[in-house]
View 1 (cartoon, helix red, strand yellow):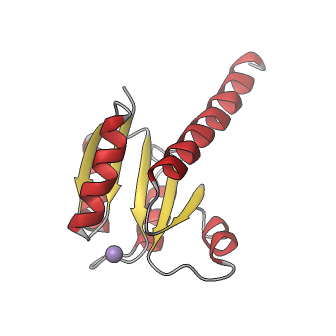
View 2: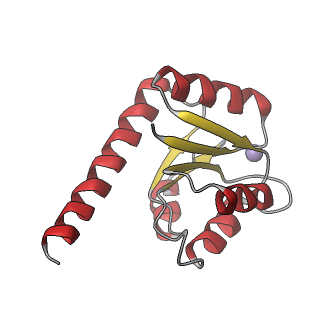
Length: 133
Ligand code: MN
């Protein structure tokens, strides 16, 4: 079962994301800020993280940087979620180290397509690494 961590301070968005993910059989956990995301993921690593960029305490970009600087967590795919889509956002967030980027409002089909693509490319990379050993 795919384990997904949602880090998002807006309860309505968390609920929507949970519904989409659970409809696809994911095991979902939710947190409301970056500090909690780091704590949760250290307790129980996720297969993928959906991270709101604008959160109280610790924002999404800072949280991502902390995650990437921890060797045990660095490889977990993280998708950035933003409320206000701006030109160049995708490039900016990929440059910041996110694996993908999605602007809100979240569309169920788009989100799931993105998750599948990300996990597939991740798996191919791992398979290649395994055969070259
Ligand atoms: Mn937010």
